[in-house]
Length: 220
Image (cartoon, rainbow, N blue to C red; front, top):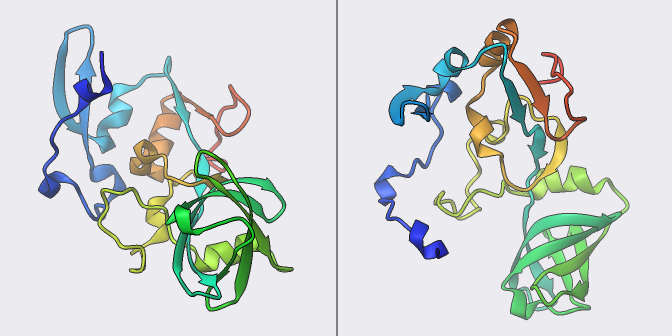
């Protein structure tokens, strides 16, 4: 078996570029393994498919605007960083584009010099280690100047403001750290969570202690 066996053509006009006004109005495909059949439905009907014997595991990681655009100093060449992992205070592993132009020792500035960073290491994988130079809270700065890491099939050049950053979060997002939204969870609404809870469906969060039931105060 080869990965290419799973390739398929998806026409551009079938890829949604904007979210629906109502999260739970998205379509849902239900597969019945016992009957070897499938049928179309809507996500708002999910509670009807679950019972008190079921456990729903969710990812409650909160997405942060991990894409930063800056310029090399002093050349002014454009650089884009996608922050991947914080390895020390104010120090991140990041994917860079174009990576070949970003060497160890180089300086990058963001937001017209309001934030600077230095490349302190380069990994064979292409990752760069970036040390941000600031005496302010780096997370606050990233939240202000960063962009949501939209998937490549969303045709946004990153310079257009995302219509609603909260729409790229799940309603139960709690713990900062994701560089991409857990997209399957974007369709949940407080109403669906209330209905699931009232029917005794257990909900566990993968980013917290296992087997911990989510109270409504924890799931939003």
